Amino acid sequence: MKNKADQKTSISSQTTTKRIMDESIKLFARKGYAATSVKDISTAAGVNIAAVNYHFESKENLYRQLLNKFAETGITKIQQILKPPRNVDEFKVRLELFLNSGIDHIVECPDLPRMLMKNIDLMPQLSEETFHKTFEQFHHVMVAFFESAQKNGIVRKELDHKLIAQFLDNQMFALIHKAAIERTLKKDIDDPKFRKKWLDQTLDLFLNGALEK
Image (cartoon, rainbow, N blue to C red; front, side, top):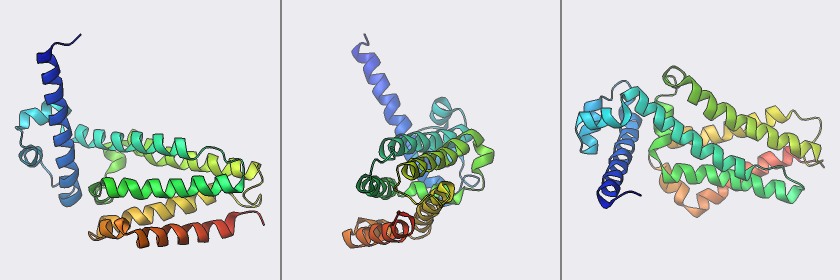
């Protein structure tokens, strides 16, 4: 059992780690990976360079951990949401939950989309494993969801479930890209009218072309 001194040290370490990660996301989003130095990160987080190196070893490993955190959180959420639908109503509900979850993720961490888009060309080189884990696994979960919907007679048989998943991938990617280049989008997403319009039109365009008549 940890004594009070150990507990305080553990809490302090967790706080420092979180502060470094939070500030580095902002810097990577604004300046880009290459233009951000460990000194920039340490100054923004209010710690010394040694603390950054102690907790993350290097700037590259810090960036990799940010991607890992994004991947683990996102994959867990969509695996819970996109379970095989048994009927049309459940299909619609799960699809709407998935889209809402994507918007929530952008609202909760608005700098993350900007960081991803700012450094997207570097991701495979910086962390190929995480890059594939994030985007390929997202896609595989969606493909499995639409494939199960086809087997249950919900989605038209003649459609390619992989292309359906790609269509939805592109829609979410477009929203992330928009959030990355428009600073005002966070307010728009927080606006119930904008959110409802985006959800309604995305679902309408998607469902009217995908559902079995």
